[in-house]
Amino acid sequence: MAIRAEYIWIDGTEPLPYVRSKTKVLPDGTTEMPIWGFDGSSTNQAPGDNSDCVLKPVFDCPDPIRGGYDRLVMTEVLLPDGDLSPHPSNTRAACLAAYEKYVDQEPWFGIEQEYTFFQEGRPLGWPVEGYPAPQGPYYCGVGSIEIAGRDIVEAHTKACIDAGLAISGTNAEVMLGQWEFQIGPVDTVAVADQVWMARYLLYRVAEDFGVDASVAAKPIKGDWNGAGAHTNFSTNAMREGYDAIIRACEALGAEGKPAEHIAGYGLGSEERLTGAHETQRFDQFSYGVSDRGASIRIPWQVHLDQKGYIEDRRPNANMDPYVVTRLITNTCCEALAG
Image 1 (cartoon, rainbow, N blue to C red):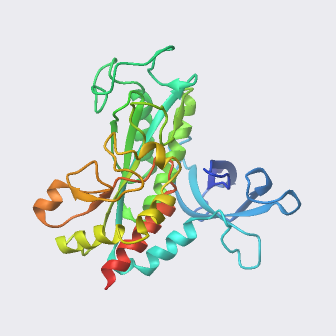
Image 2 (cartoon, rainbow, N blue to C red; image 1 turned 90 degrees about the horizontal axis):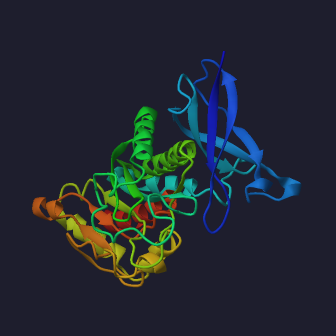
Image 3 (cartoon, helix red, strand yellow; image 1 turned 45 degrees about the vertical axis):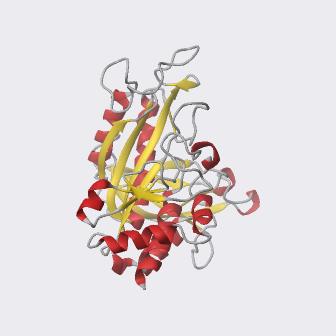
């Protein structure tokens, strides 16, 4: 007997990478996933005359699509040198370094991943010509007129649960055909590993329905909501006192920090973060209690309890979670370490 292990990695395509995967057949009973390789010249990660790249497993879980003893294997890409050093496209290595530097502060993240279903070139549920009714009834909607794609979402949610991911919820979003799932709270690296794995499962499940799941930041131009990846963050100090909450917000707004973070928050900020549709402008910074028009929202309950977490509303749906969690961990934990 044998098992199938689906090796998953992030490629080197710019400006936005693709998720790639391939199957390795392993002996039944395999518990430690071996290092593997791939042709980097076909994934924008190596030239043709020196094309080998290395896949190092970093996280594996049950494969809810194939079932049985088959596994999904999240990997990071390494160079085939003597040290197996991180490939230039490997953003996980720097994320791990940030987490290890500040692990004593116990940084936790919860990421709200928005996405939009497309079929035949238009959002799922939209008419062949023209537009659906204006936004309003679709957010957390119920009913066939207000909702499109619930069967896909249910299948994806079950797949994430069966895989053992820390999925904590789902909901329909403001635009018809747009949805969200949430991963966390878990640590800096684990949340990024699991967001990528949940994205992989989303794409695979959507395949079976003949639908594409897009993480474009502004999937439809005009008076329609964009798609974000609101990122919730806390440390042990923030979970114990309000002063740390304010210090974290101030650190995120310190000189040079807003621009540094926006540069790492995905493609399309200028189109999505316009000051409309519950956003602050990409070139401005603010924080406030219960303010969805701010860069950083302090939830009402956090203000009431005088402890808890903050929500960075700027990351786009197409962001690299390794980059986002690294930036927030470094900026906030450095400020809170003093």
